[in-house]
Image 1 (cartoon, one colour):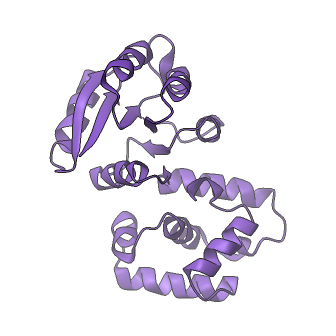
Image 2 (cartoon, rainbow, N blue to C red):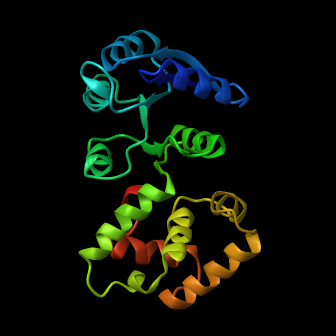
Length: 213
């Protein structure tokens, strides 16, 4: 069972997320907090497995609270859950050591996948954040073979690097698994790779999806 502390200053948001997560048999919301200061105190007492942290809240906010929790309790994993997708904050939070970054527009299935991935020791970025970071890397990486990919193909690459299977990718992109398979085949041809291992090596070489692996 994964014990989660939910931190958000909006009661309606907290209640909604808590209700949705209650439908998962493997996840329990053990507490809720409405500010960064309250979150720090509750982590000290409860030692949850994962903190779902909003960014903009009264007081010190989620960014500073995440840093303090990371220093005081390095074993506690932190997933940012926010509406913010643009600007330097996603990269700053990842550099600061958070384990996941998910937007509030994601589905409950993706949020559960993020929690399980992070709990298992991985890192998780929702695909729109991952896409923006990857595109930013492409802008500074001249001659990268990934420049030949379409936006949708790049999304499939990033989800593949996250370890998501055909069904999960299809559900997220609202296409059929057969279409995902077609995209993967086309991607492998464009990049000159034969399988997922070679794709990962090429992605690491060109700094694509580095925050995912």
